[in-house]
Length: 182
Image 1 (spheres, rainbow, N blue to C red):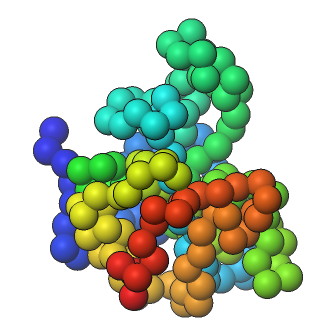
Image 2: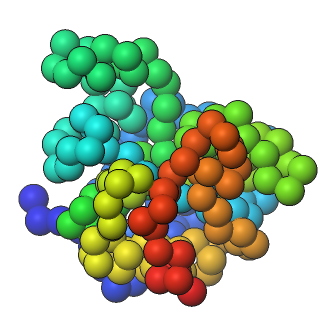
Image 3: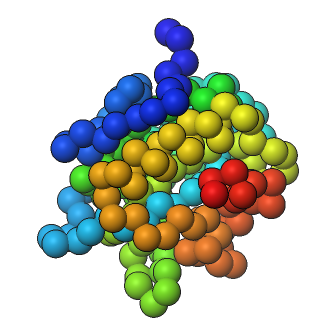
């Protein structure tokens, strides 16, 4: 399958990005009633840590991670986590949760006095780590996705996981170039 990346995305009324590869995660639930989606939280992830291109992230978000495949997997295979989107190093966009639903990406979190950031945010995971730069294709996909989200939802804030969970999380990390979203 060819990677899906585009110069323009649309978010449909059901909260799905098109074009994108859709692999639904069971790790989602309803947002609280009358809750506006007004924030984007940017993360990084790689499984195994600092290795790219494998099936680990997809397996984690779909509860199919085999704890015997890697020592780190034994530590995290029990987690029930997800994100709305995952952008591979190639720029491919995968969607796990429609934006109308709550993905389980930020954990215990708060932003400007508002708790439970999962309630009102969209989570975007970039395949990467805190230790190296992201790829041009990832930024191109991220920029197009952010624009689509802004057209569909009243986005007011774009923050890092480290901003909503300081001291607990460090991503998207020091190599994420915030200027490229400007």
